[in-house]
Length: 140
Image (cartoon, rainbow, N blue to C red; front, top):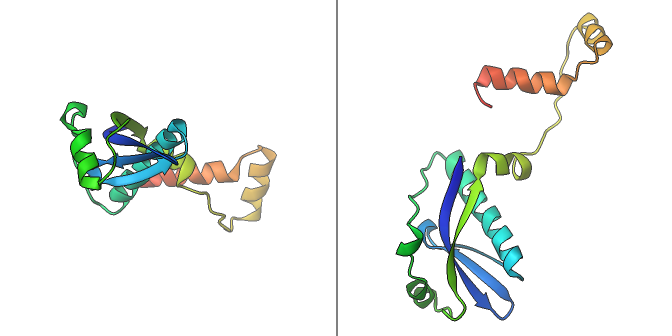
């Protein structure tokens, strides 16, 4: 599911600062606009991912027109010059699979005859275990 939140981008001497007013002024930065946008996606994904892991609900996103970049700049004591609001979007579940969820090695025991039969058929043990666990847990 795609999540979308407005973010204020502030041009600074060393690059761009990015602030999400709806998310307690969650912020990040980048040396270039492209890097700042990439960092904003990562920041948003991480924040929403950990909210969900902690069992918390993310606040509703404001419409882009409801964000007053000058008011945010004033509150942060930042320059509103060259500042703008943009929507940052991310599919948190997909992003987490690639960036937040690392594989861990597990050692397990199975009967030798089962091991031999699986090897003869070229079965990928890790894939089978993952699929079985997902099925048991009712997750994708």
